[in-house]
Length: 113
Image (cartoon, rainbow, N blue to C red; front, side, top):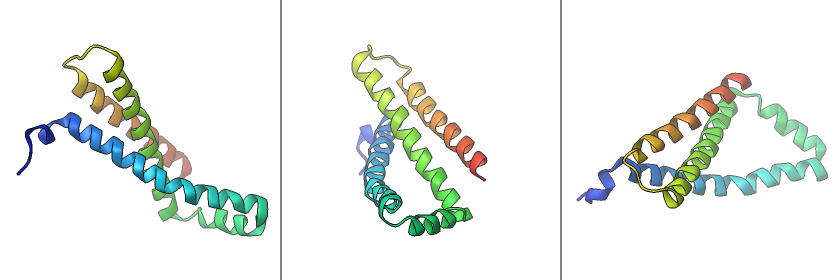
């Protein structure tokens, strides 16, 4: 049984914002671990940076930047929802947030490729 509020586009925007936040939170320890290579094992960092030139890693970077963009623009939309009066354009704001995140991540991916 699907609850009525779960068929609304704004509910999907909420879920996307929440999932992107969890994915980014899981990514952060890995990011800091790799950054620690610069301080303690520079040769290992060089090997890791060579590995990041692979196409699959570039695609994963696209996904990461998309998650960052979705989370940032979704958070801005949520703050606007909290502080501004409710309007029927909220669905447009949610779609605009996802489109802006996609545009930024595609631009990053094309620049990296």
